[in-house]
Length: 363
Image 1 (tube, rainbow, N blue to C red):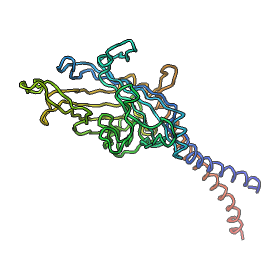
Image 2 (cartoon, helix red, strand yellow):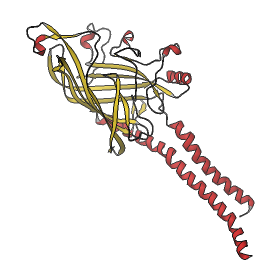
Image 3 (cartoon, rainbow, N blue to C red):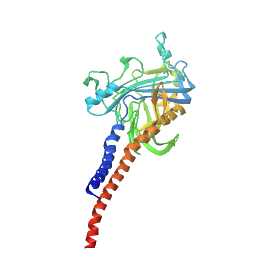
Image 4 (tube, rainbow, N blue to C red):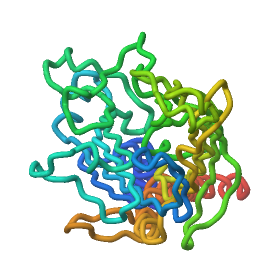
């Protein structure tokens, strides 16, 4: 092999090694970032739910539908990332749960807004690390805008609770909230529970498949606990076995067993299921079932998350293809390029040494 040919082949070997390093340490970290403009919709159904009707003062059997909307705030994500000097994303989420599958908020013409309200409504703004999905604390006063995290159960802006370390209602988001890390491992993480406004351990249990996609299954137990209330919760005494009392104060307790199916390459939640139990407790004893339901993503939502679909003209889900592309860039391209590069360099070394060995043998 001539010197010119040898140089070209060495350059080719170095090129493939460079491609491996570039894919592993630049392309993959660049792509493994939660998109700040993401929009997602999920629908969960609980067909055999028990709820307490405050209007009728009795338990009822209903079918619940819960709709979640997640929408990224591109401007806030950019500004906070710059301020914190790290990649973060900001998402606004809203979850509406009702026994009317097609519930819509009433317009201004409706007089009794309380009566027309859904059974449950929670709106949150969260700031997340764009790579790990971990919640990030951000003080909006640092930027002079309204980009900070909050949580509320009404549409009124004045009711939004901002993080307060001393508050029993909302200290701030913690743990994972909307997704798991890119490259999710078979570990125990901390995952956010909106109802208690705390994070609890969520443990890897097993591998399985959903619609042909490999997923990790995680499970979380939120232990029974009383929820803090701004005002005393009063009910008729007859409701809790105190017929001689017009009204008594009760506590609202809550517990949950949550199961999440996670696509491990992207960390996306493909399916979620919750077994919720909330009750009205009197003298530390559950007297009335406030909510009892097993509620999970419907089949259409799971299919969309796996295969992808357009919702209002916007692509959503499709994590099977996204995981394959990211795995290609983060694993196969670096591996194959590195092997090719090292083989080419080894071949050059072998061909360069062979004439010397031949000459020594002849002499």
